[in-house]
Length: 110
Length: 112
Image (cartoon, rainbow over the protein chains, first blue to last red):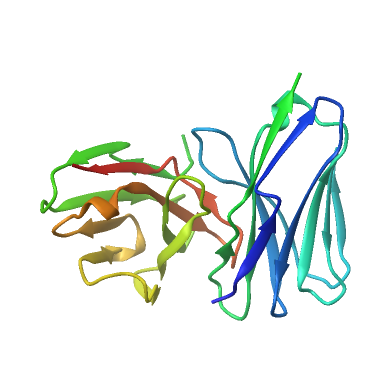
């Protein structure tokens, strides 16, 4: 299956600061998905990116898929305490089986 | 509630015992996935069904693990002769389309 590296593992921010997590693969991906998992909760689907260079926005969240389809990022503008959780990327190659990264845990200090 | 449900939510067992977990997917979803998640890690793929057919199984999955999805509805995951290393959260997800997945709340297994 695909191998995906996700960085950083943890990120502490003050409320109102921006946050970015990165997902990298050594192979070309057919698509990438992003999930959020709150502490004690289960992963919740956020978005799927399919096209090279694709950029999608959801309110304060911006998702990008690299031109070579080997990397992706999630950027949150002006973090809020409700953004706390672990953000996972999940990459799929030719099969329908996504491989999850280790996740980036976001801690927002009020 | 029309989401994915899992039962039980928590299971404590002694090493060597067998356990079985159940997942009820969203009714119109024909794809069903099982994952295992340990602390600080992302979900690790175990197996995948499309309707009642088990299409893929992780090579990391030992023969002690078996899953079924009779009639393409609910699914069960059985672990035989449990080991302490099996302690984890077992997540089920269903999907109407390739890749977008809706996760259930998980079953937390503790093997003593």
